[in-house]
Image (tube, one colour):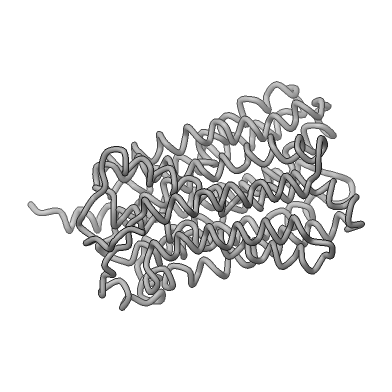
Length: 409
């Protein structure tokens, strides 16, 4: 076990990058169940005689816990310490995958998914707090980008491992293997992530006081609409590609994979870039992402007339911008850590994003209707990104004058 160290002792060298790897795996562990449910769904439906609708409810339950849990996870992270919160992510994830692999009833599947939602709700507050405590300012953007890429890594991991292992051996073994990987990361975290002397000022900050800061409210609002738009894309883009644009099913699946692959690199680049830019320019970065997201979705709409090839540049644009927004949000939360609790701000911001992920697919389905009018659904998605653009623009115009007043003459 490692001994407690003062908050000012920044990590460096091999230990810094080992901790960065642990934080990346923590983000992977927190979001892995989300993508595993989609990849493993056909096998579970057949084996346990569970309806497709019931599998969809598991995903909804996952995001309900993540949304509500993130709202309070930041405060709990402050109280219990970043290291314990990080270990909780690994424990909850490992237990959830173990229970899921052993489940013989829908109730056990639900319990496993609820535990996974708990892991997701703590993943951002815990990892961001470790970075705020342990990583020097000059490295934070890079480390945040690296650990946020764990979300996209979980999508690639679930898509590549689960179907192959489930087809060749058993879906239960595939899920249990994830539990084993998470436990290995837990052991590594115990030895490389040091306890930190708690900051009394952080424990005294209430979530309500963090919410009063205008930048947090802007980020939460922006995250909700961006998450809603992005969820519609990830949920329906492959279906649209096959049914409306006549793209082969394998290629349609690769569209999502390309978004994830490009998103890994984009999160690294965006996080590093925003961290080196003036704080007052933060809203401008979010405006660019929203604008590009709306443009990418416009390309998706145009695919019916121009052909399936248009979906490839659209997917790359989604991966370059929309899939990377979370890295920018986490950097923004850390850069103002003197004004608020990093853990609480992180939890509030991602709760807005998860809320968007939760409500969007159902709303998109309602817009789609029984006639599968994708134009209506995609138009709704474009409007969501335009609302996010408006939020970023208003935030920008309200922030610049205030920053100019603060700047010494």
